[in-house]
Length: 373
Length: 161
Image (cartoon, rainbow over all chains, first blue to last red; front, side, top):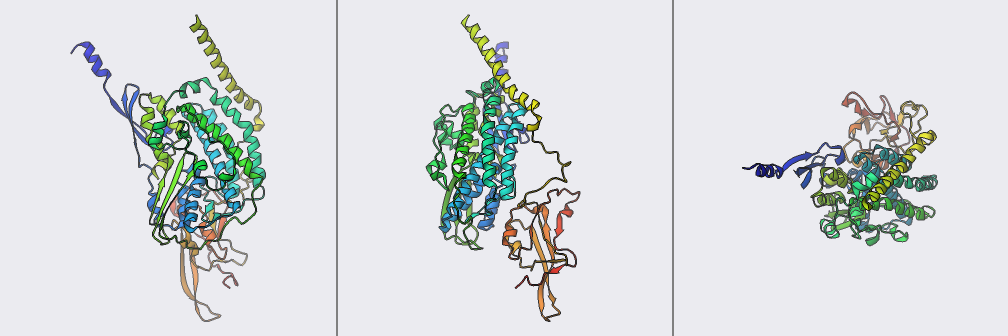
């Protein structure tokens, strides 16, 4: 073998690297088996199961009220939307119409959750790229929202605020003033995010043109949420299958066409502005009425199948309930956005460098308990 | 030549964006009042938890060491995790001469509790409520199993009617 051939043979050798399960930038216990050619990624294979708690199976032994609190623990950053999805599904099965007040409260709380989720994502995204500053700024603004949640629901993260038939407590007297205070605060602070990160030259070079996902791939993998919309696929459940009070507010669906990491980043930043618009439209006219319809202590759904989807901060969350007429569901299935979004990782990262993989994972906003359930 | 000019332009523009970001950091260095850090645990005396805060399940007793728990087990059924265990027995009531269900122990496993508030909702007599304590760290797991009714306590008169 000549020196040239030897050189070629060693250059083309593939090797495997485990990224995770205890890797800080995977945001949890996700293991990625990377096939590498030098520094270039040829294949990414996610291995799941490190945080599997069999939530779907646990739902089969729980009553419909008890299922709600388990969904908090799936995508904990958008726990309010998860709760809402189950409650809407059960209400659909019971043919129960909740009052306007409940609908508006649910919408406001969902949008606040979306804001807090995106704020945390923004902070952590900076951290992944090596900027600790953004983490502190993201958490500063998120603190105001968690305070509102704490005062309304009694908990800061796993809130369990929705119940089939309404919400657990009525909103406190100072809820509106506090939310308005937050909106005025955050409208001033959001441009700081742009100043710190969006316009930063290092950040731009690390995200622009990295991890491109085409519209066709986004549709075939089912990449929903801001990640899918950044590829030009209009998939907002709030628009297409409107639920709660989304049909009475005026908001823009953020769609970008580039499909790269920066587009996914910008889609989330723009979504924060839209969330604030939605809250502002609703906060001043919360209708009067009861905050909770009376349901039976033991809810029994008729023999039926129900599917209800909501838009969480990460994409479409679908709840499928198969009921056989008993007080427990026969089968519950969650279509979680994180799982579908993760599947597109290989397509996005192929041909890129390892350092770009961290950026891509950050921009599809993974929450591992949501993927594994 | 054009390439060099473009290169210099790019560098100058890049440095500008970095300085622009540093401005934000500089602002907060010179305005320490806008920093919101709480000095926990130094502020324990002034720390006020909100009314609805869910820290742990407690059973309030009045000054006569009486509680409102009838032992109906509604909380035990409502709990999704098997956190609550009610141990009861039929005890002879001396006034009426009849045997009557009375709770001996209301056992609460804090280590399994997810603070979902379902037991509080289920309780028909408002015997239990959510406490505001949140510092639950102990050295041994067995200390997290608590008996909520105090020793020697009994049911408050008039609760059952």
